[in-house]
Image 1 (cartoon, rainbow, N blue to C red):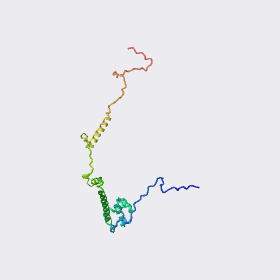
Image 2: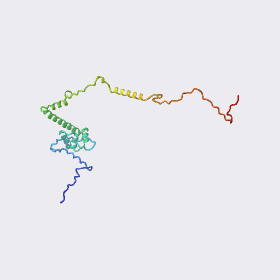
Image 3: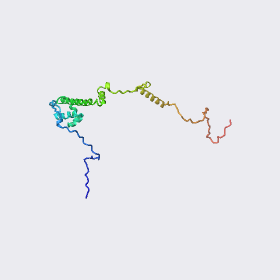
Image 4: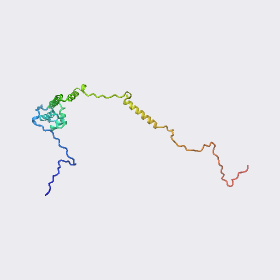
Length: 215
């Protein structure tokens, strides 16, 4: 009786042996949840036919109204984030109408979130304080007190750089000595100088001229 062995799961690991990253699962969007969108016809003649259809616009508007970023909404609509950025900047139709709908969806999301926060402010007073800090920062923002430096340390960056430059100049001047200065040089002892001229020695080349002639 042989033991049944499981086949190695090659799909769970990559070629390097590391486990593969899990696939990004996007939320499922049902068609009945999408808003009804009717964009005008395309008026731009450059770039060919636009990819901005009513269905893609409805997906983007629904994702934004649910709280998604524009990049996530573009991914849900099967387009690049750069494409959505271009749509939000181009003039002409259907882009101008689409831009107004996107801004309206973002404003509606903000309004709903504020309504939820203000509705819970009575139960959680910290929410009311947070709303006031963000809505009226001039009057309700937190004030941070920073201690001023002492008066005897009143200096600027230019003063510091000047002091450093003077210090470097002093060290440079101390390191360069005059050429005639001798430091720690051993002096060898020599004989005293004789002011007398040198003596002349007479040498005779003639033989037998060792005696002096009579005068």
